Image 1 (tube, helix red, strand yellow):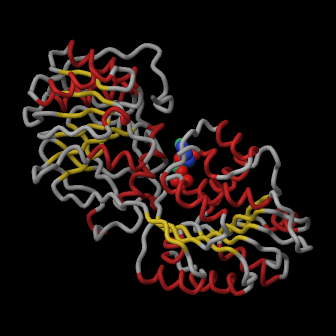
Image 2 (tube, helix red, strand yellow; image 1 turned 180 degrees about the vertical axis):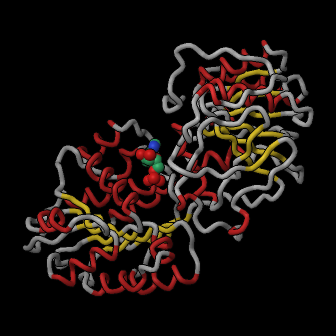
Image 3 (spheres, helix red, strand yellow; image 1 turned 90 degrees about the vertical axis):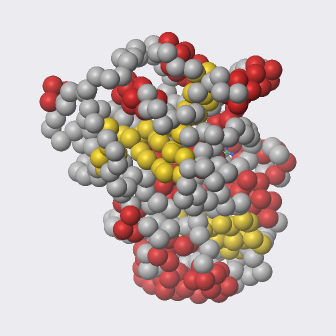
Length: 449
Ligand code: AMP
């Protein structure tokens, strides 16, 4: 399916195309037509699935028809649990609505009232708010919801976790009863269901196939990497482990896959690349070689590895983290198959912290950080405390136990705080791995496929 088939207007389609998006994600494909048909909706979708556009696009489409109700209040209201999330939603509305510039703004707790009151002094199309502050404005009479056409509850489960239930009820009670309501939630339990029952009318359900990481046979680990060079040092160390019988190493780009495979081969490993620039015959040949044991290290991109079914993969190594949290689950699922155990190791560099946070939110737990003796990172990685949402029964267990040559560490202080360590104070890394050469002109991981 393409975006053109969703029934969105030309201005929105152009903005989407300008972002480089060609295909709707599953949650967009399912939610947008239902939303545009005016249904109430409850979608179970985590961050990283493209859920923001799934509600922002139909909301913008709604604005193309003028409001029949006079007044200044918002036509679209998005409630979010946090300021950060509100910021993302606002940015999405501005990006996708660029050509017709909807009047929009945020009402967030902890932010000055003056600007918020100024925003509310003129008619507004879209408001993105945290529940407490919005309720505050409603109670002061600085905003009214009588023009409201669409109410969106983003990360509804998280708002409940944060104790916003009562505020949300009060807000909904002041909204017109003929509004359309869409609820997005990462998890669906009895509390969320009860809230949906009270706030939604005959909702259509959108449920994405939940790919679980509950496979206890896959051990997941994380190594913080300071640079590309550091990632290569870590990789060389890991692939020299005899327990690694067969691995898939994921890289962000096709070019990187080629270069890494070449370097690994130069270092004496049986390695090959697998990516979308190779024709089908070449790809099949590579996969066949891996099946027969002629390749121990396969360096792949996500697209090429989709559907790849090779048994006996002992390790999956994410040399670069995937941009989409779902891909993380796809990737690590290449190991730990058919009752065998597997190890999934991810490298995270400074520029990939946001991907890591999305992944952790998606899988509902924090990846345990480990250091390899002689190869510790210089910088301390701090992830947002909210990174792991509702850990699946793992509260006490967010950081993995140290094992073997590794030791667990928890980042503290400022993000990427070097804690005053200068390069010269860096612990010397022990040899025992092949020194590797930096790629020249390497592209940023975001330039994918
Ligand atoms: P979200 O789940 O809304 O946080 O979105 C995750 C990321 O996916 C964001 O960086 C979006 O810009 C991006 N995104 C949303 N829709 C698409 C799409 N159809 N194709 C590619 N990327 C998308």
